Structure formats: C-alpha cells, structure tokens
Image (cartoon, rainbow, N blue to C red; front, side, top):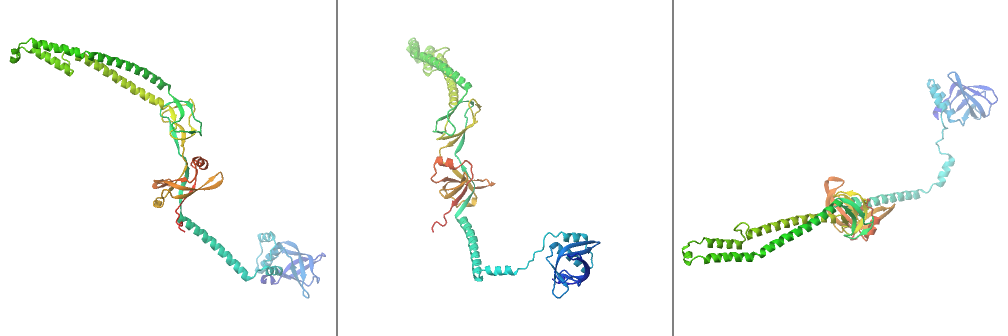
Length: 458
C-alpha cells in the first residue's frame, strides 16, 4: 500500500534474539532498513516504540531481502499493526498521538483478515463452477416457477372472490328456549333428568302452592253451598209458579162475580162499573206479570226471582274464582312445550319461585343451524337453497360440511349496529339432529362461504 511504503527516519528500538540492541533510523510499515543487523531472518526480535516517556515493546519477525539491508515485517498481529500504524501516522502528520488512541490500537480485538481471493480458492471456484448456459436456464426456471406461484395465488384469490361470498360473524345456533314459571310456588318435584328426551306435553317439573290449594278447597266448598242455595231458590220459585193457574182462576171468578152483579143497562150506560173495571185490571196485570197489590202473587214471585238471580250471580263469581285457581294449580305442572330434550335445570327442589322466573332450558328436537351476517349489497345475490361450505374446528380437527341457506332476513349487522344487513341461516346437508348436537357446539364460531357456482357451466 502507498501509505505503508514511505520510509521515514525516526528512532525505533530493536532487541536481537542474542540480547544485543540495534538502533533503527529508517523504517516504514512494511519494514525497516539497518546496516547493523545480521544478514539473516530475525524470528524472535523485540521492537520498541518510544511513546511519551514510555516504551511499547512487542515481538516481531523480520525477513531479510537478499542483497539489500531491508528487513520486512512478517505475521504482525492486528494489535501490533494498529499500534505501529498509529505511531507512523503521527510522525507523518506531525501530531502527537493521544493515550486514548494508543489504548484503542492496543485493544484491537482480532487480526485483520485478508479480503483477496487466494489462488487455491480461485482454483476451487473455477473447478466447481457450472456452465454459464446451464446457470442461465436454472435462474430462468426459478423465476418462472416464482412467477407462476405468485400469479397462481393471486388468480386463485380473484376466482374465489368471484365464486364465493364470505359470511361474517358466523356461529352455530341451538334451538334452545327458556321455560319460565307461569305462577308462583315451591319446586316440589323434578320429573325429568337433564339431557333426557321428552315428548310434547310430558310433565317435567312439579310446583306447589299451599295457599292456592287451600283457597281452591274453600272455593270448592263455597261452590257446593252456592249450588244448593240456588237449587232451593229455584225450587221455591217453581212451587210458587205452580200456583199461578189457581190464582188466575180466583181472579177470573172475581171478574165473573163483578159482571154478574151488574144489570145489562149498567154496561150500556156505564153506570157503577168500578168493581168490574178493578177485576179486569187485576186479571190483566196478573197475566202480564205485574203486581196490582202488595204481597200479591206476582209480587211474591218477583221476590223469589230476585233471590234466585242473586244466588245464581254469587255462584258465577265462585265458579270464576274456582276456575282461576284451578287453572293456576294446573300451571304448577310444567310440561314440555314440544318434542325435545331438557338441557339443564335452573332450580332445585324446595326452592320458592315467583311467576316469570326461569325454570329450565329446553332444546327442541330439530338440527342445529348456522347463523351469519352479510352486507346489504349482497341482497340480490343470496337466496334460500343457495349451496354453502361450513368450516369449523372439532377438538383440534378441521372439518368442512356442505350446507344450504334455509332463511334470508333483513337484520341489524353486529359489526355496524346502526345499519341494516342480511342475516342468513344455514342447515347442514345430511346431518341428523343428534349428529348436529355432537358436531356443532352452541355459539361456536364457524367459517361460512356461499357458493355462487359461477363456473358451474364448465
């Protein structure tokens, strides 16, 4: 290197292997010039560099140039080379090297590694190099494969986007509904086991209400008493009405007697007919059911009718209350609303419940479905019966099933509560009710893609 070849005259100390010391007046980073040294290589010489009142020494190996008083440095370490170079540059620039720079040169961690390629490496590289044409074909093949992979991947994404519609927020739904208490009461008996299948109308849970039961018994006794009282009043009225014909005969006879007591000319002149008119009026009022005098037949009959109506009204009130309490007691028996199974109970025996309290979860006997949402822009693309693929994870195993859209409705999109979207409900093909319960966990997420079958005509 040019900056290492310039020789300067500066003092360096050199101790020979035999203990003699020689002064060096001319040197560079490549080596030194001296006429006092033996004409041979020096292997274990000690080179000394004066530095601010101290001397830095390190072993060097010197190789003698034939016929010249030049000794070249061989196998200098990185620290030795850096230290000598620092002293060399300081002398050339006329600046004194600082202690920090000297310490840095001594702290060089590794030796410098030559960056030039050796002859042996060049021979190995040439011997293992493949022909240029073959390497060109290989590189071209790699680029073709990479291009096909990238464009194939992008093309598959485009085709999938065209042929499929991805459903958002898809999850499995179970036809589970809560069953609530219709009336207040205590849980007296649990008639079904959790998970058991029950038919529609089968008793599941029995409640009891002692107060209502006592009230029903009281109403039952009151009902019997009211029925007896009504029957007595009806019988009294019937007995009274049985005397209507005899009473009419009396009134008819009184009219006949009043007529027979008058002379024929009295009727033509209208003289002294008060008795006849009173008897006629009494008979007419009797026939129309009106009372012509206090405590007459029709007046007494009206009293019997009023008593019977009052007792009949009281019986109606008692019967209404009786039916109300009996219906309430009938509601104490909780029955299965449809064919299905009991998922779980929310109550225990002896527990008191108010009307409307949740008793149990009931799952209807029909397959579980998948529900998801779409943006409103797919309104014209989704229809009932549209094929789909449902993908889900079952105990670490990825499963995919064919499905069909069973219902399409406008609904609020969960991702955008202020906007309407499309709710789709799907049913899996060829899956029974029991299989759907095993495969589809309630509210478990699923990936759903609706198939447009755009390329079905190929």
